[in-house]
Length: 295
Ligand code: COA
Ligand code: MG
Image (cartoon, rainbow, N blue to C red; front, side, top):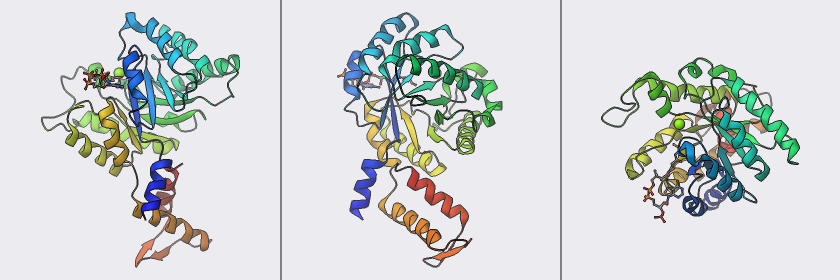
């Protein structure tokens, strides 16, 4: 049992994505030892406009030779986006995080820019993946079905409440207990549905109260329960709790393996019994999803 859990820890690789502002050499230095499954070097909202030029240079210097380091660029319809891509693509990031897309058309547009830059810099075609922050603009909420089949580069979808609340003019996005207000709960659910429909990874958004450890534990547990496979982080102190929350237990893995094996051993059978319970297709899909998280 223990061995399964230990193996899962090594192979469960897309739980925590830690944001690091690209204008901070100090934070970039510290980020590598935070234990995050991936880093997102940020050129957008955490960097002031007049620091962006320097931030691009720092990002380009930081990236080479590093695995699992993504870059958040500026929105694809901004002039900054192309400058960001020109600066970082020669350093071969694992992928690009796209903020504020209006629909999958913006992701397709980004993919087109990446096509050109991959070719220019001798990067294998299609290697650079994309995560879209799919709920940051009001109009984006009406286009979430567009992500299915949009581009092979799409690795996952995540969502954000801050830009959305600013866009609608709300004074808060959480209630007094810290729970999302209905609009943001809806955006979160739509992100989950859009990711499932597109068959890509769903990542829950950042938990901004980085000193509230118990709050983070509750939030991450709920995200895992609801179907997200990981979440975004803003502080190194959040990483361990996120990694633990999204790591399937040895018992869950073992059960998933048994379900997959049972169906494989009974081809053409729609429903089987396991430990006195009926198991049918949805259970198989669920088991396959869980095992896919370990790849
Ligand atoms: N990545 C790497 N290191 C980080 C970090 C991060 N995201 N956030 C904090 N640290 C480092 C700090 O540099 C500090 O190290 P030091 O004392 O050796 O300099 C240590 O961790 C403790 O930091 P702390 O004092 O608790 O926080 P802070 O006040 O320095 O920073 C934030 C708070 C929110 C500004 C910072 O966590 C941050 O920049 N987060 C990312 C923000 C971001 O990218 N937002 C965009 C997505 S929403
Ligand atoms: Mg933002």
